[in-house]
Amino acid sequence: MRASARLALLLVLAAASSGCSSVEPWVKPYERQYFADIVMSAERDPAAAAYLNHVFEAREGGRGATGSHGGGCGCN
Amino acid sequence: MTTLRRTSRTTAFAAIALLANGVAQAAVLPDDRADVLYHRYDGGGVTIDGPSVLLRKKFAEKYSVSANYYMDMVSSASIDVMTTASPYTEERTQGGLSFDLLQGKTQYSVSYTLSDESDYTANTASVDLSQDIFGDLVTVSFGFSQGWDEVRKNGDDAFEETVDRRSYRFGLQLIVTPRLMTGLNYEVITDEGFLNNPYRSVRYLDETSARGFSFQPELYPHTRTSNAVAINARYFLPHRAAVHGEYRYFTDTWGIDASTVSIGYTHPWGKRWIFEAGYRWYDQSAADFYSDLFPRADAQNFLARDKELSTFTSHMFSLGATYELPSLGWDRLRRSTVNLFYDRINYQYDDFRDITAGGAPGTEELYGFDADVFRLFVSGWF
Image 1 (cartoon, chains in turn yellow, blue):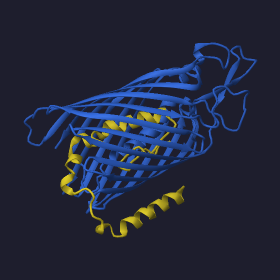
Image 2 (cartoon, chains in turn orange, purple):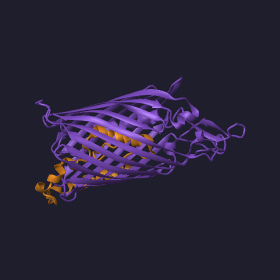
Image 3 (cartoon, one colour):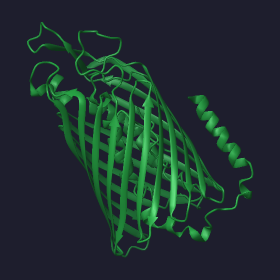
Image 4 (cartoon, chains in turn cyan, blue):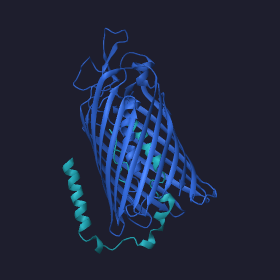
């Protein structure tokens, strides 16, 4: 499990360092206005979202991989 | 004390997620804001409510500090409590601090959270890193959390156990088209220590008992490792609204497999309103050592009758509304909103029976309940 995490890290770092500056953006900066719209925000209200995740974790056996920001919920 | 045990352990990490917000958008620190929230959960004989306050402030567009205070006031007469104990009330408080540093397209975050109640203390430290690549169309993030918990037992001063918790996580966000963004999250969590509840019991068949069954303390393995992977997508509709969906698969060394599917729709109305609606489905299998009714005392090495480890399905329906307040005339307050979210959750258990309903052991009605969850909060941006 730790080995798999390290492998994922290495793969991503390798991809990131292998000339990402040469990749042509497939969505131009002037085409990204929709992502600035508030309705496209995945975590518009972080305090409220964190509370709801807490409710799920308290009532369910499943846990983790909940946050797009990488925080997740590493609780047991 | 099911609620309390799970509450303290879980919210500590939820707070870390809250404090670490902004990691996904590595090139921009979150705006200065303040949230004051009242939360309430009411279901299954358990009522939990209280306040939560979140403050964020950034400096020189490079540093950001967040602080969170959270409180649970618990009144529990859950089915666990009613079958083997007495109703109780309890309070839990939690505080957290986070510091973010933005350097170019890389964001570093460190967080610390302390949760405390009469019989459980949880400390959690976390580090997160995220990087924008490929012209800011992809954000990669990594995180690690370490938790140190103390488990105590009210009424037994000699009882003291510990739990060591670790979380390793990886995230990827990808802008696919001008209207579509997707994400992937993967997380491994390990626990080691006293993982069961010092108050809860399992039941077993006992012909010498008038009811036909008796209870003995539950006993869990001292280690648990889980893997969870989630994929999500969010799409901007032509009429300025958004739909989103997510699927998560979970599996652990206790034998629990779970799937979660959620969908939602966000719709602005006029200049001041935003409405949301959503549905979430959750389904899990039972832990290998779970049973509603064991055939005899000490039937196996590990014993559990925690309904959160049983086979069950839940359905959640959500509604939410956000209203942007007119200008209050304060120069420093750029924007403010009032928000109300309501969730109705139905839990239906496949192998957890309601002992209070009566009947021959093992033939009682299967348990189920509805829960109402409210979140009322005010947000201000500065």
